Picture (cartoon, rainbow, N blue to C red):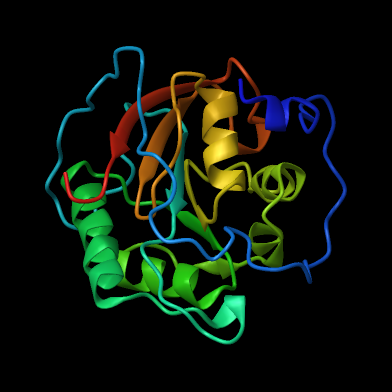
Length: 215
């Protein structure tokens, strides 16, 4: 477990809602500075399903998809940073990868940052996914804020996608699966859950697949 996150764990209660951050950019304005996802244990590769618009194919259990926005350019304000041309291709590759595995979320929570909104818009082309919900807490980019958003997921949702930023997306992935080290722009981690999405907790999620951009 990353020491940076050790003091931020709030698994035994529902954290309070966090207001939108006025601090500088959530992921520090860097491009490609984070290491790739390194899975130290074996990862189950789910059966591939290539039916366009198929619902989440996780053997009838709930799933959580953690997605970091694709590569972004610069802008005067961090929230306005757009995807680069390469980033748009990364985002489309996310959608193709999800469709290939039948991972079509029935709820999508997205940061209001332009790069995150554009990432899901490009990924969702042809997926037939639910309309995204813009949640400022994802841009707040803290462990507690992202966890609070996840824990408000309606009980009937079986597959939730969260499109956000480092360090919160990578930190949450590392908390759920200690074998995950780093989270690149355009990366995806797929977790199978033993309970509902809203009941997310340590020991209740198993890393089932990862998508690394360009691989």
